[in-house]
Length: 386
Image 1 (tube, rainbow, N blue to C red):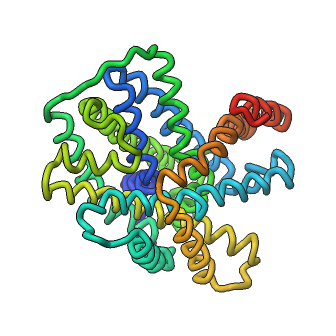
Image 2 (cartoon, rainbow, N blue to C red):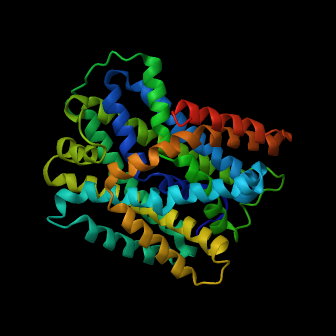
């Protein structure tokens, strides 16, 4: 692989990790918390960045400590519960919610510029494009890190700068600062980035396996990968912060809009007229990069675990995209309502598992089954499932 060479290698890898994470939820939810928190946005975005950046980056660190072996990571809970969690997460971030959510968001953002094109046709075209981008897996990091991410960052910068320097319509809220922070924190769960991080790490390491510089010599996370994680986290923080304030500065106009309509509203109000097409292109690219990664991750999973490598990899990609195509026709709000309860119940336990596994690798701290079980029960109770 020609992508990564010596000292500068962490930059394209950091860009690629950013592109993997920045998809549908990562564009919608910073705008949403900014719109809802209005004049208290600083507290809301702090909560969202905790659950949407710090925790997923910890997930990457944990998985790099486990050398991308997600079975070893989850099987500390036992083989049966571990495999159940792996399968559940894969389905949620894959064709059940993650991939179709990206497709529907791309459609909602580009809809003003697509004429009368129906969602079903758009989904078909998107899935076909992703198939040809995903089948050449060896070039995945090249595509994300060298091509799509620089274009995406340019578009995002234009949107943020123009949105921040424009007229301000900031609403006020009587909600306490602590409540605003908690709302931002739990909203960050819906981006599902910790779930994705467990498997993105495997994709990154798989693409880097021929490079000599990434290998750790002491069992920890290699410095190049730590730099890449920090770079991707910084890029995400800048974008989230900027987008949340675009939402806050336009909170009077944006309140009451549906989640997927927020992006179209930003394109019309912030950029105006035909320039709003830039907005559509930027988020279509954001979603495309995430879809490519999620399709690759889920296809790997069913190729190895369910088909035991006995069917062509291209068939696994096809099955993944066909399932995602059908779920995408539920629309963004429909997918959100379907997957939201699952995420709210699982997320606290997965955060705890991440921390406990890091402590296990670094300090040989072994307790894991009982704490995770108790947190799962607590999540069920809090969410009214018991």
